[in-house]
Every structure is written in structure tokens, then in C-alpha cells.
Length: 212
Image 1 (spheres, rainbow, N blue to C red):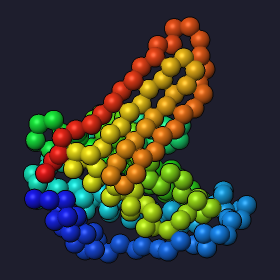
Image 2 (image 1 turned 180 degrees about the vertical axis):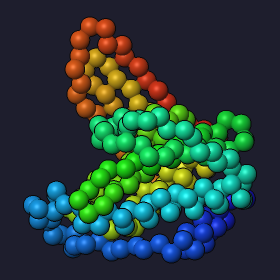
Image 3 (image 1 turned 180 degrees about the horizontal axis):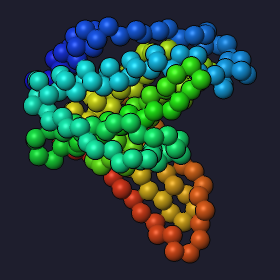
Image 4 (image 1 turned 120 degrees about the horizontal axis):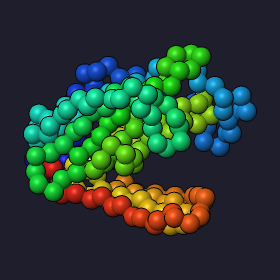
């Protein structure tokens, strides 16, 4: 089994779900209008993100023996990236091969005037170690088309399944930082935090073996 065969099966299952992709709503050189930053015209279209993740999970279960589990979600449980939106459902996808990383797929639900905006929160290793929030923002101004969102989903699944994901988070007394490396690129962020005595520096890293 190789990643290309797994991806082909994912694409077949994804197409069978009747996804509704959409192009970028504006030319890359055109700036969004001010009112677009506070508007979510069609929150239901982001369902395509969950369809893509489901297609990856189904293909992984059937072709490489991955294990899919639905997890209980405590009432009032919320994300920890500052979004403060409830988690509606949680799933764990893992490989029986030793040394591999499990994926946690958490569905969030944020009410909007036009309907419910449901995002996909992806964590690796443990539920709280989040590496992607898709879409990062569902407003009209931040919409760049569905291809970008699907690429985010594909990048994380591919990196975990092939064992090529490298993720880390940590803090010192004044900063919190995170980094993510996948075959499709890398990202990092640093933010100031309140210091003070008693704040202990820490670092957490995750990488795993291939599922294939």
C-alpha cells in the first residue's frame, strides 16, 4: 500500500458524497470589502471539509486497517484556541501499527445568522494538541475557495499517515510558540503571554511512524 493508492480511494469516496466545491470569490489582487469581515453568507458550504475528512477516514479504515472510534464529548466542552465554540462531536482515527500517531477529529458548532458554521478541529497524539482549525475563519472576507480548505485536510492526513508530520508546542515565561512541519510546508507562530513567577517552561513534541 502507498499513499497514492490511499488518496485515490479517498478521492473516489469523496466524489460519491456529492461535494459542492466553490471557486475563490474574488481576484487575489482585490481586497475584501469591510462588511465581508463580519458576514458569513453560506456557513453550510463548509460541510465539504467534513466530507473530505470522512473520505480519508473511510479509505484508511478499509485499505490500511485504521481504527475509527466515536468519542464522548462532555457537555459544554470547548476548543482551546481562543475561539470558545462548543465541540459537537469527536472522533479518533488510529493505526494498529506501533509508534504511530492517532488523529483526533473534533467538530465545532458556531451559530451564525445564516445557519450553523461547523469547523473541523484536528489534533494529533492527544485531543488537546491541535494542529489545524478548518476553516480558520468562515467569514466572507477570509474565504479563498474550497480548494485551499481541502488542501489543508489532505496535508494533515497525508503527513500523519506517512509518518512525516513533526509538531511541537511550548512556552517560556513570556512566550507561547508552536510549529508544524508536513511534506506540504511548515508553519510557526509565537505570541506574548503574561509572565510571572511560578510559570514553568514546557515543550511538547509529536511525531510518529507511518501507518502504511
